[in-house]
Image (tube, rainbow, N blue to C red):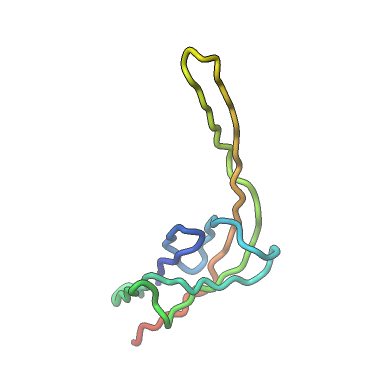
Length: 107
């Protein structure tokens, strides 16, 4: 069984036991998180698609870590003007392990 969830402005395809990096979530390591913006669920045979979200589906998980992604370099340059700027950015993330998918699919 898998689901497509939305969090942090992005969509993720998740299954039970997956570890995903999402935009930083509030909470400490070990805290439970619930993703209620579920766009799609599938059990291998039946597929349920929301418009835009499924009201009866939820995805549960827990935070297993926080961190920073690799550095992204930002370079600004204007030719013939002597203008150069170099900047860097490291985005914070939360590592989440998916525990279970509660689906509204009736068997």
